[in-house]
Length: 112
Image 1 (cartoon, rainbow, N blue to C red):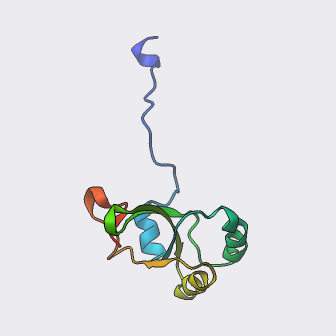
Image 2 (cartoon, rainbow, N blue to C red):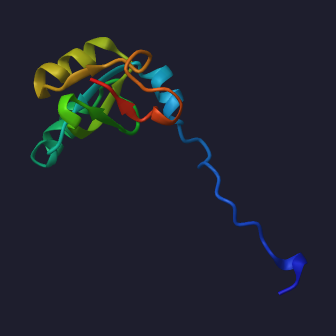
């Protein structure tokens, strides 16, 4: 294969996909649910229909007392009322991306 025929196979972000930072801007009302979500998935999907929810969830690692580490799923809402109703229905904890999210290399961590 000659150099002219070689393609650049670098990876890029999918066009049109919201970045995690943009989700935090557009959907600031976030609820963190701890696993297991398996038995709740169908009920959650039904609840989310017609609500102001982000097109995808985010993940955050909650660091609790005694080195307890839990992978949480963030459900992000544009409307605060939807977030409050979601929390009342499924529990979880409110997550404020401006205050709770770590900085730099710790941006995926939540020191709760």
